[in-house]
Image (cartoon, rainbow, N blue to C red; front, side):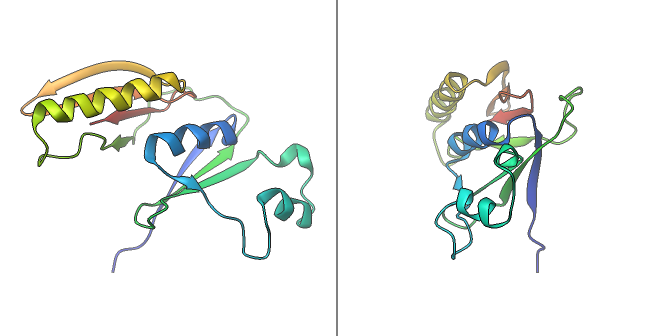
Length: 144
């Protein structure tokens, strides 16, 4: 049996970065525990000061298939290239015609640029097409 994973991002602004990645992945904010109507209600009940309510966020796949993605506030900025990155599979895979995959990838890239991402490079090799990008806090990822 596989062991479930969580992806964790260090962030200057967990709420903003979670919003970006929700749009990139089609995820949603993880619902609060059942006895609370909102995360603010939970934070209040836990005695967390309001100035710390943006110290963390979690997003989840609404279908329950993908890993949970967690964003934690850290004081230091990103300073080096990622050693691990996400591939956002917006093109539909090999069962989709190559030209249609390119169109789908480019549309998703454009939507992410509108949300604050940066397009770094474009590659087309051996029947594959992908765009290297950075999220609003500089984390590298690919859209393919």
